[in-house]
Amino acid sequence: MVEQQAGGPRRLRADAVRNRERVLEAAKEVFSQGGAGASLEAVAKRAGVGIGTLYRHFPAREDLFEAVYRREVEQLVDLAGQLQAETTATEALRRWLRANVEFIATKKGMTTALALAARSSPDLAAYSLDRLGKALGLLLERAISAGELRGDIAAEDLLRTLVGICYAHDRPGWQLKVLPLVDVLVDGLRRQS
Picture 1 (tube, helix red, strand yellow):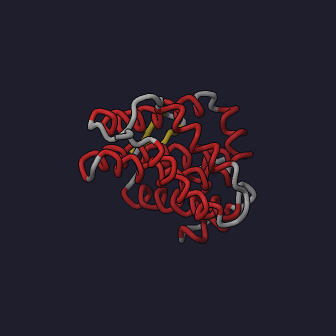
Picture 2 (cartoon, one colour; picture 1 turned 135 degrees about the horizontal axis):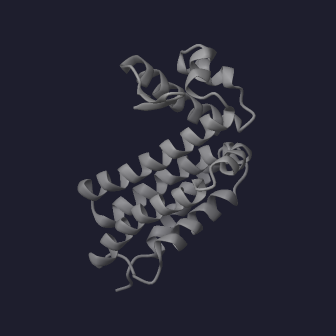
């Protein structure tokens, strides 16, 4: 892990890396529950670090939002690779889409803040769409090649459909209503005999 400093990048100590990861995990939980207005003090408290430690890693609120977002994207990309090795093609796709529901819950909690972060980092949206689209594309192609799913839908369209389903629900606990819809979506992609 490298952190940018005035004289160039420097390597973080092991405890600093652990603190940073704890802050990111805590921020994900706090933001998905309390939205962008959730206090940074609540994040620090949940992470078990002082507010100074949080600000040392993330000098601006938007830095924290962007770091959480990018971390979530990378975790989903990694998950796609793991699922390809662990399970059947269609089940891998289903599990990956279900994991995206949690990612979208975090993202929904940070919508306003992510808009601010995107202004300072214009490649943020393109980065996530590219990374997630490629990961989903590999899972989808595997299921199509296995003859399990029909081949007339693009990964980007499937991703947009999932996002649309998630954003159509706005009441607390919406994720529990969306997960069965993910199953319906995947079942609807099955090749007809």
